[in-house]
Length: 305
Image (cartoon, rainbow, N blue to C red; front, side):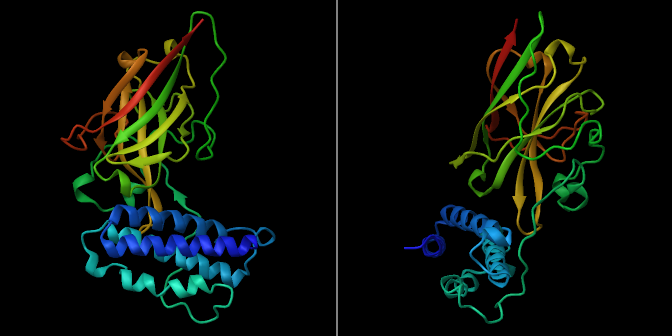
């Protein structure tokens, strides 16, 4: 069997599995299947011509199917399902995906392939989202131009050691969220800010989380803080912004944030509380995300010569 046929069979099996879960009411499982397949299709739709077995028209159709999968995934996470993309709508796409090499009709839904995902600068997303219960005035937005632009998922190496100076490695183990299983492509942005919300080190984005289980998103990723602990200014804090992709709005959004202050830097495990967005880098108006015992779980390692 050719690689192309294997790919098509895998896509069809994943599509069928998702719609089966959806029909049975296993919503978390259906959401996961739809999101995984949507990412596979988006990757193919955005691949260069010389790296794809599909024509440009076929890739457009593949991209539109990916958009519909994300719309269905979003519908399963919404309380206003009467206006959303329905399972019956999605099932119309199964024969198209099954016969993608010969499909030459008009696509049944007025959608477009999802563009390369937009990752917003701190503070920018609050201008796009209207969620009254989460809007807070006066949140700091840091100083995005203080350090070079970063590539998402690229972490920086540990700094060279200096005699008498301490370096901090933070392992992001997991974060507790009541809807952990519904977060699409979650990752964490880590920054170190002074009391005025100004960056003291380059901002780093983790790769996407390794897995979702029950009420936890698991990372198990180490971050090297890019400044010796002794050189951090008084009142500084380390911020952790949990971000995820919103298919309906087509951008990556901050869901919540947490922070550690300097007096909390000590070897071993630590759990820190989660706060509602927008991220308040000045720590002036903090609102807990939930009353439930859900936290960000970290492990600290100190390196000193």
